[in-house]
Amino acid sequence: MSGQVLTVAGLVAGYVPQVDILNGVAITVAKDEIVTVVGPNGAGKSTLLKALVGLVTPKSGRIALEDKDIAGLAPSTIVRQGLGYVPQRENVFETMPVEENLEIGLKPRRDLPLRLRLEAMYALFPRLRERRRQMAGSLSGGERQMLAMARALMPQPKVLLLDEPTAGLAPRFVDLMFEQVATINRSGVTILMVEQNATRALAMSHRGYVLDLGRNAYEGEGPALARDPKVADLYLGGLHG
Image 1 (spheres, rainbow, N blue to C red):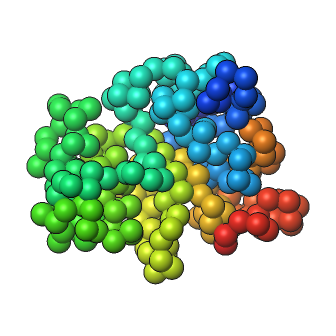
Image 2 (image 1 turned 90 degrees about the vertical axis):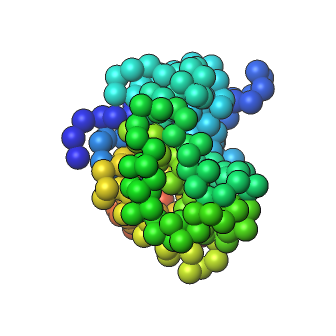
């Protein structure tokens, strides 16, 4: 791991002018890391990811991707700059086959060879190769999540943002999804993940952040945070894992 690839400082953002959900959040993500953000419901975790990718416009603060300020840019521009984003819901085109979903993912980077990117995704997600002509809407929950991740990876992002990748999955797919996240990271992709399965996600992360009421509460090495009694009592007890 070397060099900060994503830096967030003093981030303030919300959905309506009078109410701030994020109140000065600061995080850093180094190249090749897995960084997990956890915290109670309403802490601002998903809002953070939406602000990073331009779906929520920051009121103030800095968001830098490899020292380039991306705060407030359009989502399509931010994706072209190198942020991939997998939302928790509505993350596939259900009436299109798997392969067409993947092809759409390459739209921000028409300079990349389609066939090579498809083959790279099928190598990462062999199950998608088997289902490449199947309609996305007929996939299981775990398979949909794989497709959403693969589509976000098609344009070779510098950082992949994952919002609750195990939410709503059957237990066997939860295990598979965490394995998949680790595999993606080993392939050279930096990951920033929001996850309710907090203890397990922190245990597999290089570093972690705990948010509370839109502010930084704790940060540190992921496994150490997962084991910290104070963090567990205050923030992890009501979360899965």
